[in-house]
Length: 271
Image (spheres, rainbow, N blue to C red):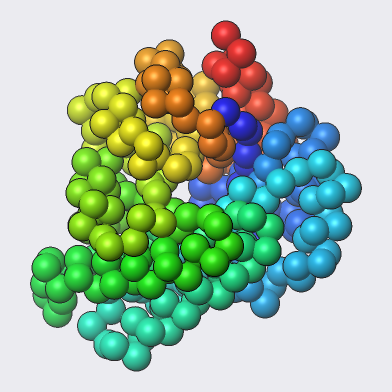
């Protein structure tokens, strides 16, 4: 398993569960100093990232790009994949494709989380699910040209009513014709929704493609009440070799949150 840390460039999300906030140059250099393997970046849009500059910064720090988030599509641009308006759904899918194109240059994936939308009084549950599936088919097929999967994240009940558990996510992925979508299993969301986090990961099996490594209160690992022994054992059981990525509050500050996550990563993966 490999270490990863989040960098946010989205001012509208400041204070949210991302560890590093001080721009790409400073954040990537700091992550490299701490020995991380990769970064996961949340940007307001692809126009905010110069691919050549990013490549230079990553090479200098000895890091990989693990993934690019699409969350700003919702947070900043109010685009979501289950919108009742067909034109807005197409805008949302294009936003995702653009992120896939940028991430793909680095052999990295795009993540769909908050952009998945939800059913409501206007869009009923079957229709919202249909729209989401159409978007995952579109994105999964688009990502295939880069030989990377699209990553889909089940969220807790307070953030979506599409998929909230690993089992929901597996069922959704099994309904798709594309095989190029994997699951992001976020331990914070799982702490709310799963009866047994370890068993849920085992049931996800080879569909588990990315992990958000965070504690029960969304603080860095070791700052809440999550029990990690069985979780790490479950990941080893399914032969998970991907990233454990810190998507956590920058508590008590970004630097210490990054250091604490690295200490926890080394403890749990090397024990």
